[in-house]
Image (cartoon, rainbow, N blue to C red; front, side):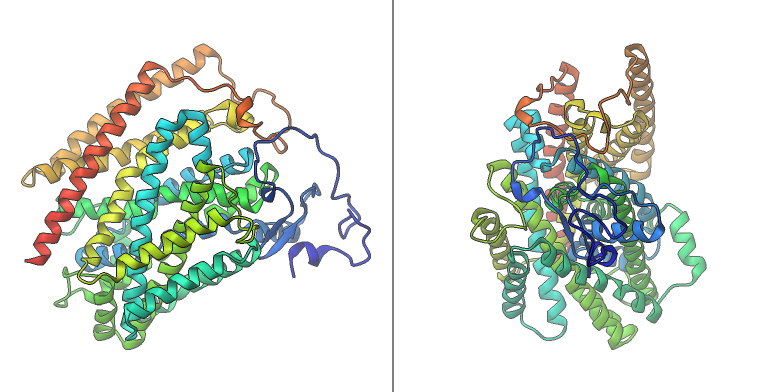
Amino acid sequence: MSPNERTRRPDAPPGRDGRGRDERRPTPVQPSAVLDEAHVGDIRGALGTIAQHDTGRRTSWRSRLLTLLAIMGPGLIVMIGDNDAGGVSTYAQAGQNFGLSLLWTLPLLIPVLIVNQEMVVRLGAVTGVGHARLINERFGRFWGAFSVGDLFILNFLTIATEFIGVSLALGYFGVSRYVSVPLAAVALIAMTATGSFRRWERFMFVFVVANFLVIPLIILRHPHAGALLHGFVSPGVTGGFNSTSVLLIVAIVGTTVAPWQLFFQQSNIVDKRITPRWINYERADTVIGSIITVVAASIMIAVVAAAFGGTPLRGQFQSAATVANGLRHYVSPVAGAIFALILLNASIIGAASVTLATSYAFGDVFGARHSLHRSWREAKLFYGVYAGMVLLAGGIVIIPGAPLGLITTAVQALAGVLLPSATVFLLLLCNDREVLGPWVNRLWLNLVSGAIVGILLLLSLILMVTTMFSTIDVRLVAVILGIVFVVTFLGVAVGIVVTRRRREWVVDEPLGDRTTWRMPPINLLNRPTWSRGTLASMVVLRGYLVVAVVMLVVKAIQLGLHHHH
């Protein structure tokens, strides 16, 4: 029974809730940018329903909790889906090769997750359209092709890693990948193309709950509390910083804060029909999801580090399958089986989320119907793209002889390298007053987001330099680039503050009620104009990322040849 149903009297008159309040109080009607009528209507979530015109105040904790349960979904799923096959593999590699020495990276990612995804929450609820469509319409097809093109390539490779996870997980139980991968592909298509958003979300919640299998795993094998605390608060890397450890740090960032998340959550919020009135609940959904994600990631690193410390497998990561077998040997058969199930669960929820993010973006770019509320017959292209990507990615994984562990790490690192570009577009959209009106970013949020972009670029630059010059002192490079970053950031921040004061720019100028303000149709908006400096910066960023991706590929090939020999 839904929250709405639980609080409604059976004899309540139409349009009235259980306490006799009017749920359909008229609100000012204004043109909207929402194109697909399936994106308008009641919120029908896995755990409850909220009427489209419900304006009743939530004054009790019970009513707020029931509302949160009905809204909850997009933030929780995007965050748990982020701990996908690549995530599990990357965290296991960190624990096996570097012990607890990389744990400190994870708490630092919580504010990054929350800041990035909170901006996406506002964009989805206020505009009513997907991320890909906003980029295309506001910046033109040239920049849209770059941004969405990156997404399609990266997402396809990521989906392949999810099927690698499926094959490794079920392979632990003796199931051939020629059986497990096709079965997983069919299951993914079946649970998505039901024509019911609520049914899809309930499927996803099953995988969200299964994520808590990490709890019995840490009960079976956990490190000493003192060592765990030291890992969280002491930045450093066992064996020192070098190109290999920096690659893994970039991979941890890329698997925890991935570009596909921006596209998925915004479109899923639109598809769930969440409007500005419910933004605070969706923010809470996102914060809860980010904390669960980082805690689960920390547990995986800690368990593998504790299990393999002082054994011959220490520093010998090959794939998630060898980790499961190692846990069976050094901890217990139960631990190995639980890790394999965690990997399988992560692979399925990851594949479902990443593929859906791609299908949403495809619908945005090509103007096709794209909603889980629609049946297969009503949205053939939307579901066709989903099914096509699943089948093609699964087919690639079946090809024998592929270096599965290396592919997984390289894809996560690629996500880390491409994230700054995606975040820059996100920042530009969240400062576009034509798009967000009274919901645009505050100054402090722009400064925090700018710092995040800078740090991500700094990491990818360190990776590029250490790849080109393998004998260079990584710590010295990091210190020099860090000083340059801090000086540049402070200079830019001061410049922004001074410029804002001169223009007497006011964030909260009256634009009506924030809870009812929606972006007008995009074709009625004034197109944004970039200054020469902004355009030059974007061109330089794009050029740099191309070089960084090439260097990443070179590093991945080097590691592949090293493992081969």
